Image (tube, rainbow, N blue to C red; front, side, top):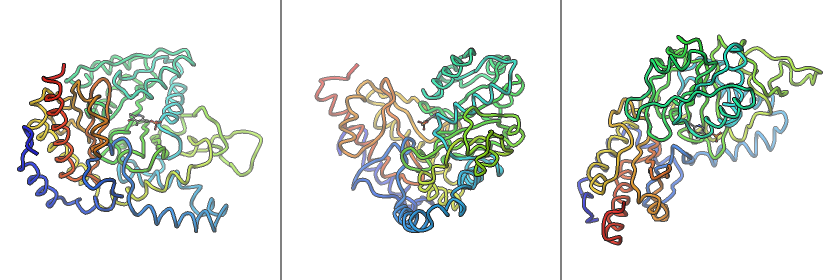
Length: 419
Ligand SMILES: *Cc1c(COP(=O)(O)O)cnc(C)c1O
């Protein structure tokens, strides 16, 4: 490796960091994906823990295979709540009976935003941040068009984050404000407590999307007085492709909300098969259909790891990983004109780093072919997602070096810097 910027010292530094990593032992608990690769997309699809083989096998032969329908009474039926409570305690700062697993994040957004709008009958505006993930924006637009509401877009400045006065003003006649805790693009962390307070000052409800923060940094839903939240489990919680998302509804609010998909699992007495829907008290009123039990298995492995080390330790490593990636960016990628699209302020940065260069779309297939796996966010942002439990510093060093070499090769081939 003789490309400009990439040095032997970086590799040595990575090895030292790995040797001193208090979470280092967890990396070997995940299924290996390459001899010499770098997985930079644990924030999109987390890697599977090896222990899943035994967990799946036990589930197949014992719970599903032998206990069959009796398993519904032996834990399956309560799993959306029992597992929800564990996620709440280990990662969300949520007391019991407020977190439940079930639908995709998209469907939870639909259910909870509708419920929030119905709870504020005199308000006809939904506020959403422009840089939100597409599904959040689309669900909001869909609900607005179905119910004759107005969408008000928040447009935060590129570096200043969300202005609290602007947020308070925008929420003045809104039923609900939909915000992402960590931006899926820039990784910017919003101040959950301050934003929630501003929204409440204006008399609106707040819904937080936690997809890019759950499992990688501490969240304090109860302490921040949050009303509603949703989040993915297949990202930092390694729940596997399509594993069910969670919803959080603050205890004080539960009785005031009715969600729009009335199903038998959200009924107060599902097995009486009665003539009418009766909304139960508690978090189960937000369920609709049969719990996706199979989809809730894998995330339990990662949850056990987080319960063992504590989310603070996960966050500590996450900050070190992104700081290390930015240090490597400065030496190896900035010289090629690559932009840093994530803040250098660690306190305001989530678990990934976004960098931009016009050559990235063309470079990506070559990176993937060589087992260096970031993802691309249009138009030409490369996301370096660093899942603390499954990522080594050596991997970060290797992946950044390969990206740097790819840019060097492009310069040589193209006879100059592109764009
Ligand atoms: C990943 C992600 C989603 C995904 O929603 P699904 O319904 O699981 O497809 C939603 N919102 C945000 C912010 C995300 O990062």
